[in-house]
Image 1 (spheres, rainbow, N blue to C red):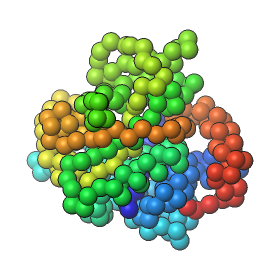
Image 2 (tube, rainbow, N blue to C red):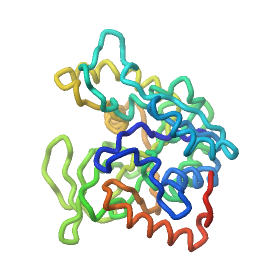
Image 3 (cartoon, rainbow, N blue to C red):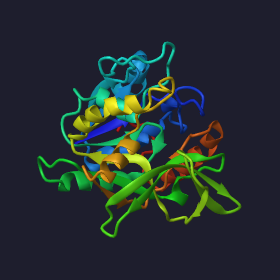
Image 4 (cartoon, one colour):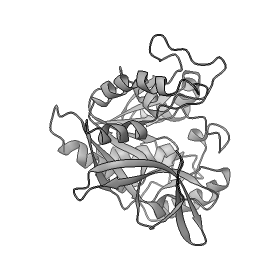
Length: 302
């Protein structure tokens, strides 16, 4: 099973290449914990989507240690991967978004797959849920996706707001819409503000949200390609900073009833270094998990 890891982000709020920021005394990174959990759950191949200029440092610090345990492949997210006839503004450096990142790996991804962000700790239960769903899928099925959903309270930081996809779904746990929102805890309550504009509302702690952990049948690559030009046309007034995002695309496809997306809840707790001040808390949280025996006490590759 393929695990696709989105690792081309610039880490602007954190400052620097946070994917390879040591997070414990043994020098492990958050991505090491994710790969450890993924391998334990049954994933046997990892596809890193990175910037080409980061290949050497990424391979030296992450890839070579993982290679003895899992097959490793690389794909490069580049602003050059764009439909014919379209040109981005000169000087743009920001990646074009997670949907475009996955499309950049179209020649490397072999079959159905799961995706995660490189700088988020997802927890072992999330990978178990994703792997079990992948194994249960009928061979050759198309357009049946899944999102690994977290309780909102398990995904926040005390150091500022976070971006999460608030999930709306029917009584069969099938997604009806995904609203990218700013989540923030104030005075002991959680609040969500739609990023596209809208009223800030209080939400329950157990509201399910997306952490960009999806399970996809391989046809998502065709869906991304088909939606690329319409996205660029809709974004032609702000090509300097627009992003072609996978949550937006999935929500759009679901609303048009072109695909389905099952909501699979997890008991896992998210940890991440959204802000530099988050690091201390993440280090302490992971140290507790190591002390409980959930992870090795030494440096590990997978």
